[in-house]
Image 1 (cartoon, rainbow, N blue to C red):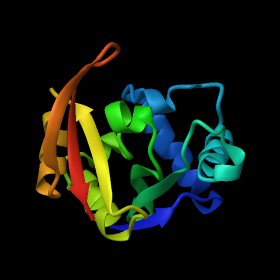
Image 2: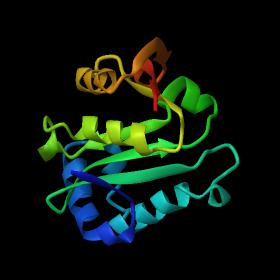
Image 3: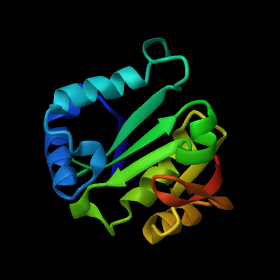
Image 4: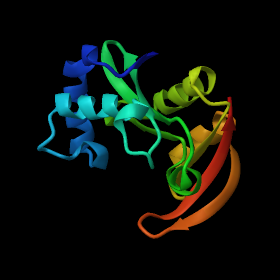
Length: 162
């Protein structure tokens, strides 16, 4: 496995990835009116501070590649605001459903820890998401606290030092 920054070079593979993720209910990929090209354009815009609203921070997206396929994505939010600190954290990731239980999430988070733009990250997950808890803790994440979120319930917050 290896990591690449999101780019149009992976558009065909992104289409397959998005279809599988959407079919398995991953909300980020369920907008049927948005093509992979439009999705990728939004991802690239999100990475540029000059193109996003002032209340947002840049967000870089990386693809995890295995045997020529995208098997996971990880997003690095570079900066802080109230939403990042108290809810979503600096990191978001998901693993292609057919690639689960193969260490993809752990590989991506460990990679970001060593190659990312920040010296420490707040990483969050739902308190009942035991696979993510395992990944975060295995990568060295230290539990900060649990907070209640009106939409998703209890969120577990961790600090992960690079």
